[in-house]
Length: 478
Image (cartoon, rainbow, N blue to C red):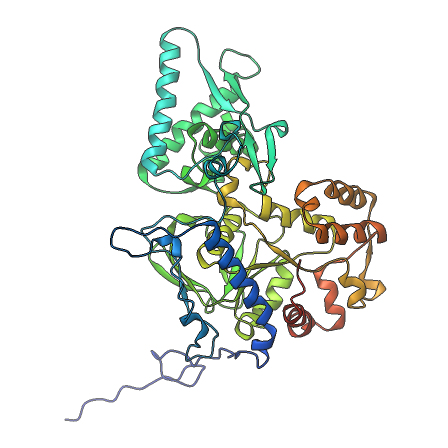
């Protein structure tokens, strides 16, 4: 008796049940003018790598092999082309077992190279979970000894006040000064804050023991009656990091996802392979657990840092990164810690330039300053959160006339905008760059501002088809 035939039910795509649907992915090829457009960008990349090699002389071990200061780049192979038509070699970053590098000079290195006194500043370092737990336990022992001696207890905490935030020109970032303060449980004004601090120390120790991560919101809800407001528990996290001497990420407390990345980069995240060219139109959320990212690889020519999510989505949908190989990143406005740390890490590991696209207003420049020089709230951890030498690609005040932006797309600056612009003119990170000073002076003088989306007045895809290719071709960044 012949076997019964199984009836196959067709799917919406026309194939039988159980077969994968036909891919409808839109393929975007390398732009025909990519060699010309990316020529100056590649020159900038080579200058960056040469400068980095000069600043960090390669060391050799006893076997004569170069150390990991060589960054693993093969410059001869970099000139070749992959079979898929993408310029350059796919660069692999450090091995997973090695700690991430940073482009930033540490305070210790600065002290060796100049007369700057390292003791005048405080800088935290990367620590393991065990080291952080030991630091918390040391604080607990001191508290116990004070209580047993019937003195109450007080905590010695580095001051994070504005007066203790110092911009160091040699480092080109904000660092924490050496001023310290105390938090006494016997002082009526300080007793609640002291209690919150000890409670946070207890919770952090439990989290680190389990080798897990929690969100800042999770931490707050463990003792709502004591914390009352999340800003209280959030602020104490930074205090604890400075007390222990570790980065805030070492405490295993993170914020929710905010940043996005799409383009020519792949990595392993906690063992899972992530290819950011195949993460849908919107790309990949930048994970708060940066320490779980390993084996970063990329054949991108540059990183495009975008202030607004709307502009990012335009580039993602148009697959700009396929036409001109790059990595596109946004933090959707004011950058969060994870995005800043992710940018700093991949830039230092891949050694490719970062070009920024922000609004032509004082706040766009302030956002750029946070990426480059750090924020005052996190100045103690600026070494791992800042990315030096980001190039300002656009939208610049001079672009408004250069690209004949229509009057209806130009906005009048408010009094507060003008005040902020004048304050920025006094900032050291602006003053050291004459071209930035000139652009900001144009903005303050004309009292005009514009958002990136204003370029859509020339066409919704103008930014990806005309503006950015022209900017890259001309090397129009400062």
